Amino acid sequence: MSGPMGGRPPMAGRSGAGGGSGGPPAGPRGPRGGPMAMMMGGPPPEKSKNFGQSFRRLLSRLRPERALIALVVALCAISVLFQVVGPKILGNATNIIFAGVIGQQLPAGMTQLQVEALLRTRGQDQFADML
Image 1 (cartoon, rainbow, N blue to C red):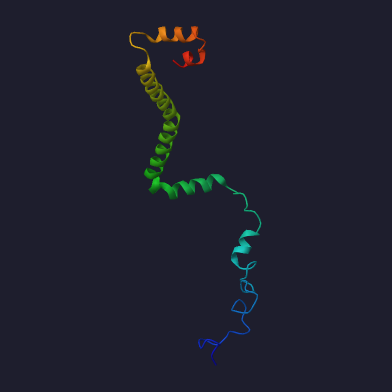
Image 2: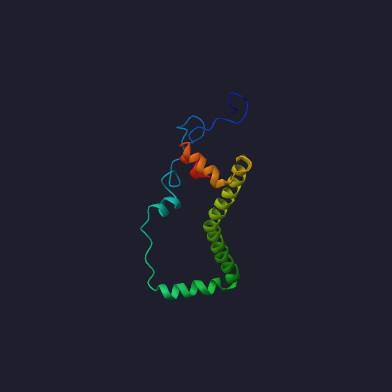
């Protein structure tokens, strides 16, 4: 027997197929059942009874990868170094660019100190401090 459109017959009596509730199928593997539910709602993991022995076993398993681990640690240290030194270098570069731009705008024949003194006499102390 065919359905209304001439295709497959309607699936009556099966959950999640067509005219049902439209939700996921019910049963032990539904939204609240199955292996994931057991893992999520289980007791917390136990503490290691012998941490030293477990740690030594882990190190022995990682022995073939020690060169890569050393490389990762070295790259992490270099990354931290760049994060500390980078802003200092960027600040110095900004100061140099600022000094060049302001230096071009100074009147010809006047030193920076003379321009600062002139600005302070005019009451432009904030601009003089930037110079």
